[in-house]
Image (tube, rainbow, N blue to C red; front, side, top):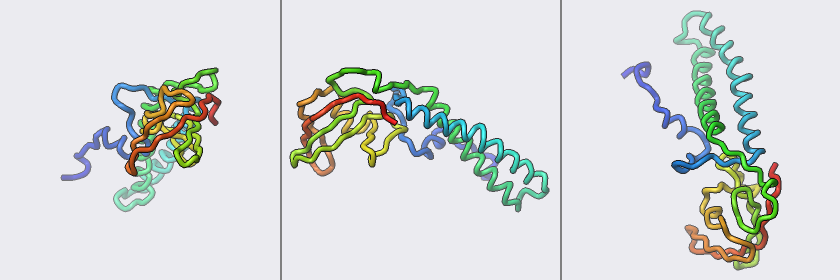
Length: 184
């Protein structure tokens, strides 16, 4: 069947994006910095890259035979990629609930936006910040609020011991410190 008569489903669009899907019925919790980054990417694609690409495609289409016109073919492909990402970002932004951890104040329990320091049985301390799905950066200690570690930490207090089930076995972590600070 000709590709011209097939339709890509919207589910395929989200499978191509790097961020995982939100749990059914939940909001897209995000910090102010994460929301700002998504908006900047959306604006860059919508206001800068897409209009420039449309001009190139229009110019390439005016050159005649489109079947062997690389500018036209690759321009249309890139335009589909940009439009897919714009749709994804607009859905994420539309369903976002911005939560500023710095506004929480004094709180002795772990919730979204908390920066938590834990200690494993060997005495090694690690610090994690619980952030939105689109802000995950494990190298910087940013974990998603739906990750197994974050789910284990939610609603615990300083001094509590958390049991984390990992592929390597069960690990117990002591909660050393909980704080709410602005995340860049």
